[in-house]
Image (cartoon, rainbow, N blue to C red; front, side, top):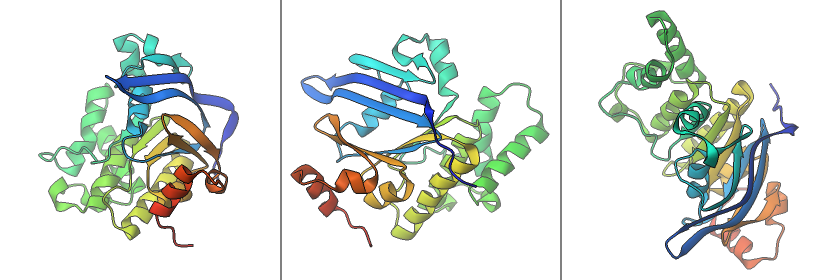
Length: 255
């Protein structure tokens, strides 16, 4: 299967987005468009506002100024009920996987289904859970506890739990953080697989250049509270800007 990016359909549109915490200005007038079926990577050093951005997109934080439209809806103007409905269309893959330690893998995946989808039979639930686990290559872990899984497996299960509600948008927060290079590569491949198989539109927050190069159809670099560089990986790093060069030099890419 090939990627299917529709550059005529905006899924996320952000204009002049500003967010500060006290005297600390994190986002200083951010503009960004994300198109249907696209994997957009947001790069930036720790503390530059990458995670703040996706929390505002999903309505977990409120912007100080600016417009944030998701699936045509202005997020800041939605009622609590409308925001809850929008969030069902947004999958959030947390850095720490956010699994419930007291639940088996099966129970972790059942939880969002039972909570959000009415009138599912036990057979329906079983089928959805098994399909989600097969999608991430971990059907055999269904009765295991999170403590019995590796970091990479927990990350995959977290993605499976997100996918079980069939979101239109995926937000990945540092998906390869704390993983070894081989496992990171597997997660990168899974992100691309999810994009193609489920036709998701994704924002991938990372400071891992290997992840960015492997998954990003387009890269946006957040510097000093704004997107200073956008384009392909090569275009973004074809720069004499010392901030860009030092970010590249800090990371390591083989080849």
